Amino acid sequence: MRWSSGRRLSSCRDRTEDDRGGDKRRGLIASLVSLGTNSGTLAASAIWALLLAVLSEDQLLSWGWRIPFLASFFLMIFAVWLRSNLRESPVFEERADVVDGVALSRDEIEKTDEELKVSVLESGLKQKKGRAFFIALGLRFGQAGNSGLIQTFLVGYIASTLLIDRSIATSAIVYGSLIGFATIPIVGILGDRFGRRPIYMVLSALTMILAFPLMLMVTSGNTVALVVAMVLALNLGVLGLFSLESVTMAELFGARTRFTQLALAKEIGGILATAIGPLLAASLTAWTGSWWPIAAMLVIYSAITLVSAYLAPETKGRDLVRLNDAA
Image (tube, rainbow, N blue to C red; front, side, top):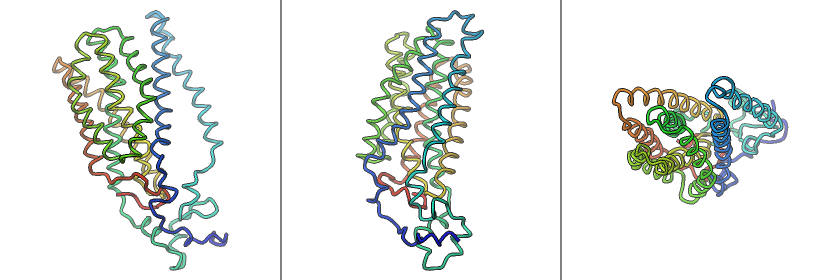
């Protein structure tokens, strides 16, 4: 067995929250991931705004729309190259169930001598999964739902239903993304200072409170009010929550199943929210002939995030090497 390497499992003790995993700047550092996503949103919106400005309607519909998709292909090649040159993280290397850079199977762990079965390993293997996953799913569902409404549906609604120049909404997303370069790290710092849960709940509550006033501004006919409303909605209900999501969802899960559970929670929550949201919003606004269903859906999505954050444990400073989930 791989125990012969000389690294004994018992050397991986149940570490305290003040060890390396409890980095006091983890929220700020993790927010850089959100800055990367925000950069993509900004670039896509900026390219689309440029195409709207320089191409005619016929040119845009015949070939112009293909330009952003072709550009994304080259980004994908770069991303594959970048990932292939990254080393495994120290969190993986220092896990209690990793020997010589390879994760041990459950059978290998269970066949070890009793003296080598430390409590952190047993708790990670025997803990019932589920609660942390559904909390993460709720956090992701609310944030992705707001994103689908604000960055996708609302842009089209402004142009097709309110009959406002389509470049206005696109420009608002560009401005909001630019401001997001300040919002995202600030939220990361606040999460490090006060904890993930309170900042999550404050941002969600503010989005709920402001949903109807912001939609009144969007539909007021005043271009400046529309842009301000979309910038606020984007930074409070989407980018701020995404900044917290980048670190909180990783901290919720134990090291042994973190990648699987995190990926499932993010993708399932994101797909469901962004698939249901715009379709439901289009149906409700057509049925009612009003904008209020959009605001109501923002309230509902943000309430899901608020409740999930309330039920979640505080994960600030949690040791990422631990194998058990935080909940």
